[in-house]
Length: 202
Image (cartoon, rainbow, N blue to C red):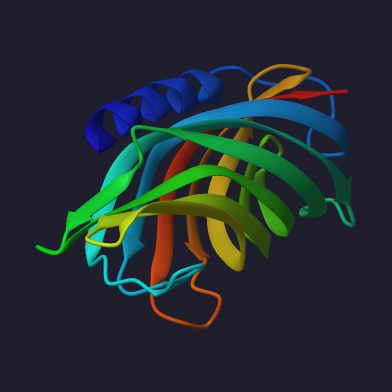
């Protein structure tokens, strides 16, 4: 999956390299969609049922929407803020301990981040991102005591970076990597993402 997504993103960005945007990009409001590879890597995170030994990772597809605002503080430097929501597909992590069947199922994630970038050309922005993330996660345990399940919101932080290219007056394409820590300081709940996005700029 990762190779396919990388190939699609490379083709889209290569197309963008041949399309010069006539309007000033990366300055003002925007909305967009994004999709790509997601991996959740769990050790023994704390849950509503206490610390749960999972020791598994799961690769999945992730997609969502975002909106934000960019501001050019100088001819080459851009800062901005962005909010987004992501959903996964086939992302449940299941572990059979021998005495219990543990299922951790991420439902959705919310991101609120800031980014800062440098225009290496008039239409190509290289940037870093950081901020807050929150994931809604359902944990289920089936053992000798019976079946029980509970959902919780996990607060965390994320960092990442990428490259974005203006491909027309109002459209830009981007490729980005993100790392998120959702452990809440206890156990391990890491998330890795490689996302390709398309934004419409007003």
